[in-house]
Length: 158
Image (cartoon, rainbow, N blue to C red; front, side):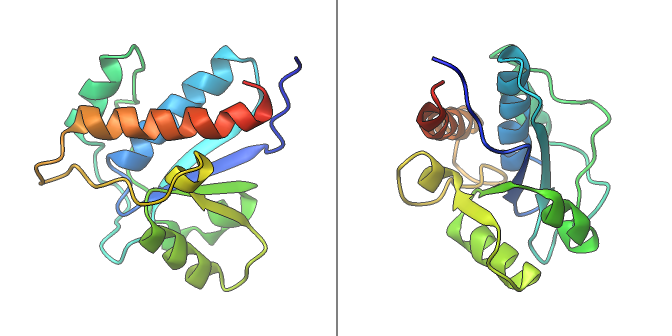
């Protein structure tokens, strides 16, 4: 069966773009590369405390290395409020929570984008919790992100 993924650009959105969205970005980049699909994958933060130039979480890097995916050592966080063109360019926007989804929708002020939470994309409901500074384990968050992404991708014959 031929693989048909209708989007050319995927944007992953979380609060500050140092952990969850980077895990999802790393996984999708690896997935599309292995499946020889030309899909641009980028991530950013939308919350009021998002800043440009923050380092990617070492914990996020380590849990991705555990599954053979290396996150960039030079990547820095992106505050999407400073770069609306990144949002505009995306064909598909996947957020980590309902709050992020609402923030993106309010920020762009129009409803012409395909926007899902990662859980919605995977046919579920709810949010993927932020593991930073909490009891939530990074491995659990990584596995939950991957599970939801893979469920969503199955709709496209993967």
